[in-house]
Image 1 (cartoon, rainbow, N blue to C red):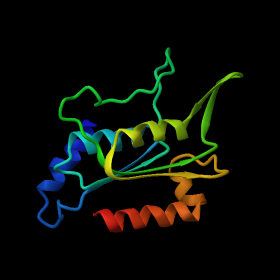
Image 2 (spheres, one colour; image 1 turned 180 degrees about the horizontal axis):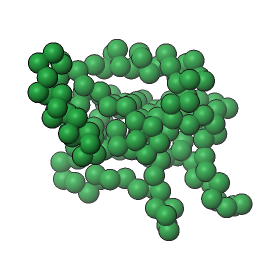
Image 3 (cartoon, one colour; image 1 turned 90 degrees about the vertical axis):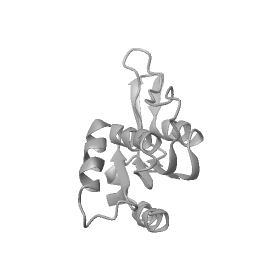
Image 4 (tube, one colour; image 1 turned 180 degrees about the vertical axis):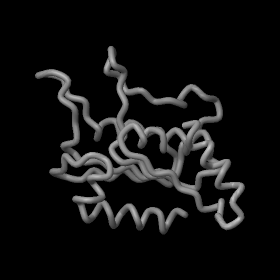
Length: 147
């Protein structure tokens, strides 16, 4: 998330940028970064969109969420979007679900928030915006209403 912090510092130095209307959008592990940044930099980021967030420990396969141990960590104003069929088959009997991961993050997020799961979609990240018309419409509506 240090690259996002550097971008925020740079944006603050630009006189033509309305720094009260900054959003962070990320896909996959970048969706996790959008989530973390909304909690670490709430005074700088007005809203965030997380597309197909997911990050699991290599050995444990447990969801990894950076920031949850920080005292001042408070993610809010997040839109989570994910396909219900977006998953990773680790073995024949073990599947990692991006839908479940997004739901896990959404439960820890303060309002305003929304979790949209797109039925019969295995599209991951930005492919949701390319292939699911409703996702693209929702993406722009969220930014319009929350920036």
